[in-house]
Length: 410
Image (cartoon, rainbow, N blue to C red):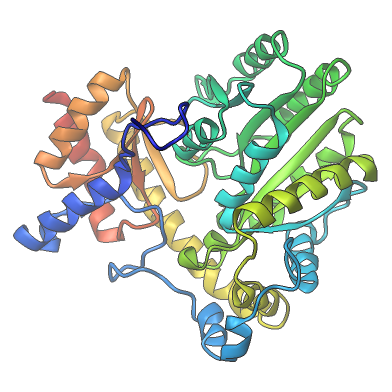
């Protein structure tokens, strides 16, 4: 006898990240934090080993009246001022002629989930990268969707051939395409696509969209930690060239941008050539929001609005300090990895560097060996994720060499 729907997946969820985090915590308590390398958590940590919470963000949040924190948002799709500032934040100095809407969501994950539940029919297939945030597959299965993967890399470049082949295969079996592209600052490899790669993707999907509608879900969760912030959004102008049959939905994470992971605030931004197309998605998204979470934290939206308008200069200055810190940590690791020939996927910017594993079987053996040597990382498909965002500079020095020596022993 079962009380869930018959199609429900009853295998217990195993969160590999938090499981390893707990092991690292126990090791630090037993052997002392100075003897443990903890490169697990995908959140921003300072050199003191503590979670970063931007003063430019939370000093104001603490001053928000209780009644504002307690209040409902003014709309299921978010407060009007908030939605205006989200678009301005992403498209400031960007020449876009596309129609758009902004729908508030609980973090960037809410934007992804809302897209998965709204775009495809049950039992259709969503296309995701083979190296990716694990929750994409979970969200797909929870919405009764199938998922297939395209290979992320061909040597050190985006594997455009695999991308095209996978889409064409799926297009043979269903009447719509939904493909996920996590860019810039790809999680978990730190890859950012070139302008030329984006142009080829758009041109290809424009051709496919002559036969069936196509949707790109562009997950921009880490966009505000690009090493070249001034140009991090320039690729958005390329979307001006999308056809009537192609839509782009941006999944934006305020949780990441403002180091407010627990406040759960973000947005989905559908972009299209026609207002009618945007309106259709907005209506479905609004109903999905109402039926799933109903409301986004009012104070989180109000705080974002204030930070990016009234306190923008202070916020950018504080955030830049930590971008520079992540860049320093990653530069040390990448340089030392090169010296000892420790293989990793192409890294350009972002929270993570991911080691390239020849198979998941070898990955698992290696991961255990690392933990046996008090080095804690996270397993991803075909790789070992090393979190530059939470690893101190001191712990970064010499790490690549240690990891290479351990790899030789498996």
